[in-house]
Image (cartoon, rainbow, N blue to C red; front, side, top):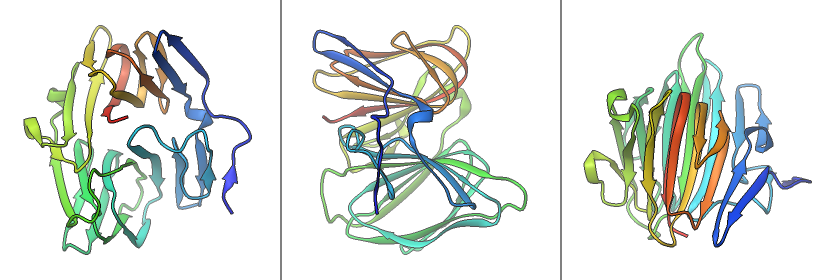
Length: 252
């Protein structure tokens, strides 16, 4: 039975003209503790259901998962979804019906296109270290495509004080190719490091702070917080403290 949140899980809206920034606080996300898995859901997922948070544009899922040593997700299936995984700590072993058997570690990003159907498993094989990762689902531009897989490492130096494109519809600048109208950037920010990302007219921006603290368009975010941007001409990042941030440029 889906659970319905009694309160809308955002803190406040800042609106000017046709623009709006909504903060999604970390503590207000959905959560579940399965013993071997502790997870937080930025959007409705599994038994967490909140009509106010069903996704944002074509961004459907951001799950922050922590997998206990020696455990993981057994083989299960997906269809018609672009799935991006970002490991923050530990390692994640991946096996799928396309024949891939890999391990994802911090600094790497994985893209799996479920297309017309794929099965896979994810496992933390460590004896004494938790795996901490983000699982992201983006709605594809076309249904029923052939399943696909891609995994790449992105150097820390390329993310330091700037936004590194890690996934895009055309795979430009060495990014992963997602079959969706969305681009994903990752950046690392401390002290006076700053970056800006322009948003074309009508585009949506979503910021997820994986760790640390950071100002987004002048608003303070802490680890796990999100910011939803509508009608904003750009995303401005500043005054980071050990910040690792994911920034999405999304179709409305």
